[in-house]
Length: 118
Image 1: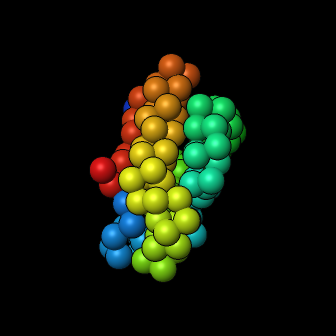
Image 2 (image 1 turned 90 degrees about the horizontal axis):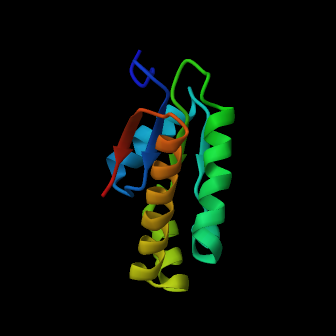
């Protein structure tokens, strides 16, 4: 099945806010464990928040489909976040958090990372 881990523990990470990625995230959330990544938490303490996200991923890693962490949002929500926190600051905080998540999950034995967005 699409999204089913093959050959090791897996996680899906989505930071893209494109229309297509929003559709894909919405569809995947109907089938697999999914958790929104809160921009506010990334800005407050990305490293601690990343560890919390990793704990959640581990708790949900035994399902048929890989768990999903997503910061994907629609255009209106993205505009609100960018106006409130600044476009560069908010995107950098999320990217830093996702990088910390990926490093920590690799250290915890995750081998497969499915990523949407840059």
